[in-house]
Length: 272
Image (cartoon, rainbow, N blue to C red; front, side, top):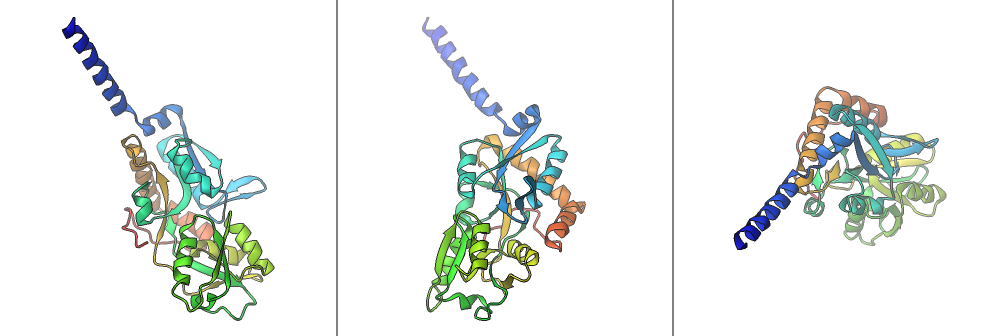
């Protein structure tokens, strides 16, 4: 009886281990035929709503990735502060909000190859003659999206100035831009691609402050670092590299940024 019980226990343990080893998010996605991803649709030109239709760089890119994988894309719109926690809670398969690659985030998440440059910069009102370089924000009010690396960078940059700026956090970048236009803040911080897009849409209202003050950095998509998700990230990376090499990525970049970008085809070591 002892041998029989031991054998049964062994089989149970072996079966459990096999079940764990067989768990594979990519296989689940392909079986379901649906790849569920999340972003914050308040981050133009990467993610935004126009007449309730989802548009942007990430939408166009991920549509191509889904085609490469032979599945349909399902998009979820969440506040930025809920996006990464939602990934960890397994409410969806991947984050396609553009996330800046940082050393701290790499300890917690798996990043895809870059989908865009992400260097932090500032935008001012077009008629503001007092801000001509990043250092001119000393003692002024600066707005940015809560929880973003760009906001963290402007806080750090501000500490190097004679008088640190009054940094204000917003739920999303659009609210920061609205307060900038209304004169409630003197500058907004975001990635250079985001600010170039915003300034191009409202040339009479906004102007980008050059050069950027941030360290060179990149946006990527984000997945879970578990073994279950490893093949999913590898498949997404393979699709992104193919899309980059065959020119589709450059076409999407030119559509939204006006220019194409030279991006690494591997995940770079972050400077942030």
